[in-house]
Every structure is written in C-alpha cells, then in structure tokens.
Length: 333
Picture: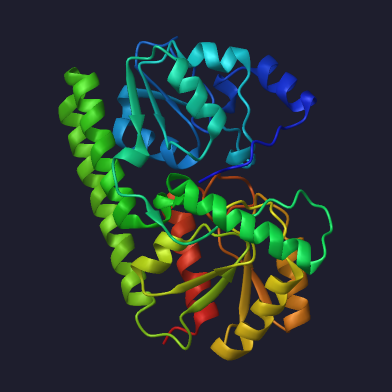
C-alpha cells in the first residue's frame, strides 16, 4: 500500500511531544510510558495492535499506543520523544505498510522484540489502487490520465498494493493474535503460561465473532455494500460480500465524478440501500453520494481507533455493531 505521508499540524506535533507517549494510550489512566515499569512494556502502533497486546498480555504488560485516540492512523508522525521511548520498550507491535513513519522509526530502533503483524498472516491484493488527487479539481480527461498512471505504478510496485486491513477479518486477526502470543511467550518466558491462556481465550472470542458473521450474513437481499474507503476487503471476501469503495485504500483521497456516477448506477442495479462512512474521516463525500442516489447512510467502523463516537468500547463490541449495520443494509433474513 503506497500511503501518502500527510503531516498533522505543527501544533498537534508539539502537543504530542509535550504530552509524551504515555498519555496517548487508551489503557488505564495510570499506564506509564514504555520502559518505565516493571512489567513487560509493549508499544503498539495503533488500536488493533494495542487491543491484541492488552488481551494477550493481561496484567503482565504495560501497553502504550503511538496513535492518539481519534487520530486517523495514516496521518501519524512521531515526535522525537515518542521515538526515543520506543527504543526503551521490551517489544513493539505494529502493522508494516500502514504507517510509514512508524515503519521508519522501528527500522532504526534497537528494541529487541519487533513484531510485525503483517508477517503473521497473508496479506492480499484486493485490486484497490490509491488515487491521490490532492483535493484539486480536475477534468475527467485529467482523471483518466492520472488513473492510468496510478495503474502503471500499481503494476510496477505490486508490493504496495497489498491491503493492510487484516484486523477486520476475525479469522486473520486470530492468526495474528496467535503469532503475537508466541512472541510474548518467547520474549517474557516467566509469564508464558498466562500469555497462552489469554491467547486461547481471545481465540474463542474471535471464533464466536466469525460464527456470528457467517450466520448473520448467510442470506441477504444483496451482497454489495458501499464504503467511504476500501478498508473492508478481507471482511467482504471472508463472508461472500462485495465491497465498493468511494475512495481507494486512502480514506482521504477524492473520487472522480466518473466514479460517483458509476456507483449511482451500481446502486440501482445491485439493490444497494446504504452508503457507509466512518468516524475518523470526513463523511462529506459519502453523504453527498447517498443524497444524489437516494440512499441511506450509516457507520461501518474500520476500527482504526476507539473514540467516544465509536459504537462500542472495544474491538469485539464495535465489530458486533458493524455486523448489525451490515445485516440491516444488506437485508439479512
């Protein structure tokens, strides 16, 4: 995935530096910065990695997150203090290719245990090419030329086309959890038995979630759903659905007028009722498409972060909420 590196404002970076890594964690309020506790200190790159570390580590770990709750993970730029604290951790858990700034910092870090979730399951190319039009207006001819160029780059850089959103497939997420547990057991053998027990308990929860999705989406009026960006490729593939994204893998890229027209036509042909948007990026394009095509809107959360707008307070709760939204939109029987 060839993600654009967009910078958050200087004020936000300064604030992050001043606040420090510890307060960026969504864990308990007394959670300390990495390297400053007598527990197994884990730095997680963003929420899905944080959740795994917390669930598997239990009472034996101190988890801090590099991505502030409410911040779109692709936007992350690390402060010097965060980078330094990462080097003091016992382990870092991340998903390579999702956050270029994190990848770069980890490559330069001497932290002993580096756990790349992308290497614990198989990433796939779901055919989504990212188009960055920079928010500028272009004619359809210019769009066609840019899209052709993007397709050419996609062919030349196949490794960047892999979809990183594996955590939205409970089965793949469980594969990652198993790999994380083994890494924790190896890095902190004194608590290996507890890590194994916690991992087994998490596997059961994810297995139950998988069963709920299979049963809930088995029989529906339509198999097609529209989303703000292409985050749900693995979920769609797992449960026999078709995701049509307004944007590509980049949640903030702008779709061409031709793409909007194409989606309006498809909505009629496939009985699409709903355009899904998410909590961490603008819903403007999704709501405009819905209004023009006479469709409803609802939230389908890609779970890149938990905020007060999330329909649930953890991974499982939000995934259950996503299932209900899909059942309603697809006409589950």
